[in-house]
Image 1 (cartoon, rainbow, N blue to C red):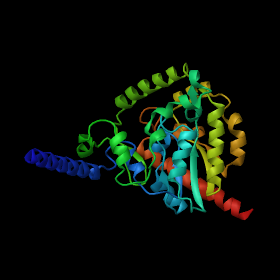
Image 2 (image 1 turned 90 degrees about the horizontal axis):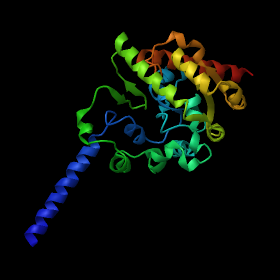
Image 3 (image 1 turned 90 degrees about the vertical axis):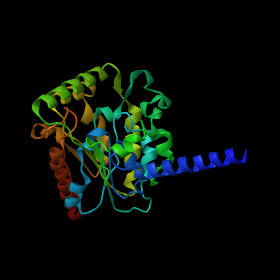
Image 4 (image 1 turned 60 degrees about the horizontal axis):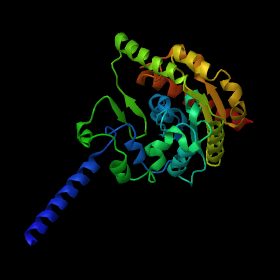
Length: 304
């Protein structure tokens, strides 16, 4: 019996050692979210869905703004504006911040809900994601995430897939084939998916209210900017169908923000991997534009 217990203890120790070794190897290649949940509390952030996660590069913002900013954007399912995302933002924010920069990207998708659940926050899509359950968003390694929310086999941690990597500043760096055939194929697939969303989604007054609450909360810690990122013209038509009165509905929030810029007016100037997400090259240009725009607004406000 003693021998059996010894064997079990040795096996348990070995298993625990292997598990912890594996967890400590997890990095930006592990998945599209994990590294974001291991970085310390932040003083400045980019917020939104996957358009922002892939499209806004903090390193380029820093060149213009002169300060570190963390990309804490995720995707349409995980981080639409609402109580779940608000609480995660609150946990990630360094409460000692006094002059932060907060870039909140907005589009119809981040303000939408499935029609059958329009009035029930408990049924919002993000309630069934790690974002709703994760209590700790700043530990390294983040055992809570790895044990309860890591998707797929832990073998992925060692595989280090080169297609997508979350950089240390939170930017989701995606490398996809950029030949015309590949881009067109992905774009057709993505646009078809978004057309189907039109039958199921509607704009939510509750989400707009929570966007306002998020802005009001962050306003106590710095400057809040609203940004509408560029998209492929075909996706723009779909977004306009879902929310034809976009600016009118959000005008009261635009008036509260430190600044608002609509880059869909320049969508033709940029390239997209799938009609939704900016290529890394175009993301660099867009990030630089946003940074320079913030500096210009800040200088104008300081003169007044």
